[in-house]
Length: 275
Image (tube, rainbow, N blue to C red):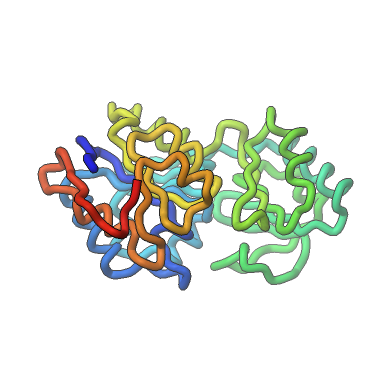
């Protein structure tokens, strides 16, 4: 299997670079750093907040490239130190919260505002990590321009998406347990493509790894989409190839075979990699 002239590698975190214990293996760390030293740009693209990435991503990887947080709502270039924020305006925040309260009044709502988390109920959830969230009423939330809105176990995702698709980007991840809402044009693919355009790099020269719904747009745009073995079926159907799972260093399985000249890379026959 041939990869040609790869200039950018995009890495999702959960279910991809991180194993199920939310750690990055030494093998994956080495593979990513080796590619960085060869001159390949590294972009970490995640739904997570900056504080959460700082907790789970090893320090040696935190300063080597571009960080795409909140699925593209907040961007930080670790090299140029440039920051970009694309929030949902307060009007749309209020409309969405009103809809949620009307359709499922007891809903758990969290909002992220540039690395600060606010919740409407003082309960523990696996989706709010690495933080002490601030409890805020729904009415207070409606006044905020936010990086992202999170709904846990919300049963009316399709209705919400249908009503607000022209105003925001709505996706459902984590086995349909988490609804994530970002600004209308906010996505991993837009963040990556805009960065590539500024650096005069073609999308065909981008290799992207992922496992869930928020990676689909990126898979459709980049030259070499690589699905994890544990990825959703819809992502595998778009993939250039499928690598091993996040538990089996699937990222390293591919990156270790990128030659030092950053030119053509031939992936030989392997039981762990399939078309």
